[in-house]
Length: 78
Image (cartoon, rainbow, N blue to C red):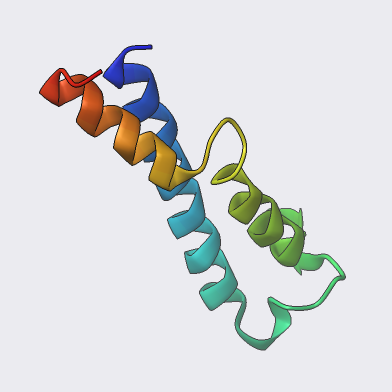
């Protein structure tokens, strides 16, 4: 496995989680509702998106494991 694939997974996961946090913050007190929020652009299920974003750090290896893989590959360790 190359470091690039681990870096891509790690970067994408971190970006999605930050976007989910921003969305939750923007939704304010409605962010934790299980109901969809009606916006000018359509319905948005903020809490579901936030929960799914958290799961990404576990799929295909945790973010911490990906950081270890990147470090090993860059340093040329076994």
